Image 1 (cartoon, rainbow, N blue to C red):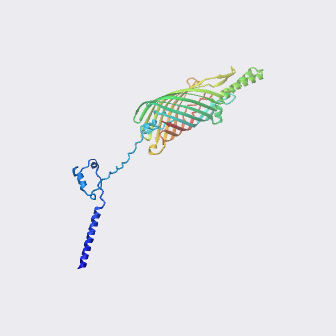
Image 2: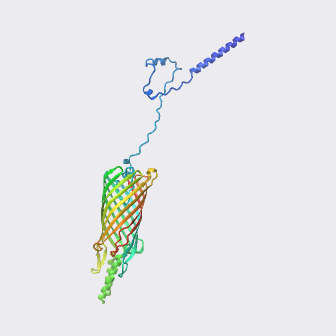
Image 3: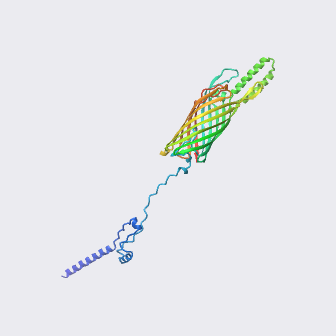
Length: 434
């Protein structure tokens, strides 16, 4: 009986101990996270009880039963908005932009864009003149047709400065040296050099979307010298014939005196080796540019140009026995129609651009030494293809190859026109825009 009471008491104590542990575990269980309030609740919290009773209820609630105070919620990280690309007006090189397209400036088609740049073009040109007539002999013979071939090295510095939204001045300075590439050329016109410059004004007439129309006018001056021994041969021919004529008229002529006269004549004739020349030219043009999307642009120019060159060769005069400076004037008029189309692949991620140029020029040449009413006419064509790096908006860098054919014939030493010359050339093009 006693053992039964003992077992019953132990069971009751164990039950009480288990209940106490459960109650204590319930008092110290971690509270649940409160539900995050909505933005509207954060700004306008709604309480189920009046404000006067809320503190009393909070005080009456045991600490173990209270919900922990809500912690301030960190602001959600907002995605960063993409920065817009800089406008064209804030980029260097935007002066050659029209619409969505950045134009490649041509070497032979005048531009309609009011831009600011400085550039250098340097190249080598092969020049051939078929059927050039000359007389490289001491005795009188008939005209001999030979082909002249020269290698030309030219360098040009061009610039443009934007003065206003509608005005820009532009110009260039250039120098060219030419050397004969065969014996006939060395005998005829062995070498020459030319240097000069142009200055002009470009005025924008109007702009509508991706189209712009401008007018330009320019004037320039150039000078140089040509060197060749053809004129010397002609003078020696005149000197020899004059000496024979005098000997026939006076067989008892003092030989020593005749030799001295010949020496003076020969020294005088050497002045013919160099022929100075100078020229003045002017012109005006109506220029247009049209952007066809970001990849393609078209340019056109319709103009008129005039050139007046004066040559001053020296000849031996048998009457005075000394040099005689002559003057020869050549006038050239050039109406011109030029077109250019450039394709730029940089909007697709390829830093590559191509420029195709074409110029058609009817030419009229009048020579003061030619017979009255005798003019030379021709229809000249120029085709050029340029390849450029277009990865930078402020830079134009590449190469241009071109051919010029159908030129006006060259007037030879005896005023006989040659065949039509042909040019093949390659030049480096560098321009920087701002």
